[in-house]
Length: 73
Image (cartoon, rainbow, N blue to C red):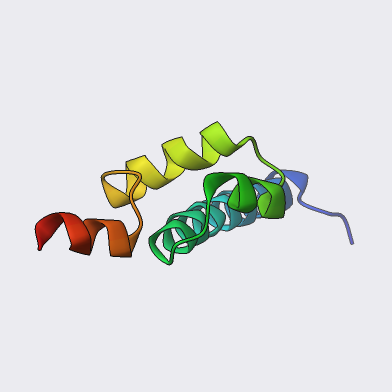
């Protein structure tokens, strides 16, 4: 039996992409829950500014859920 490397590598690439998307969603969710960008960055081993950009892309801004609620009240 031979390995179909093209299919195997394509599956792995898709798995990596899905994992990265889920990680980004988790970063955004952690920020909404009130965690600092430095803390989040340390947890996922990315620069805090990258964590900030990810949260802005997904959440629409960089504020926590509490900060958003205070602003709208």
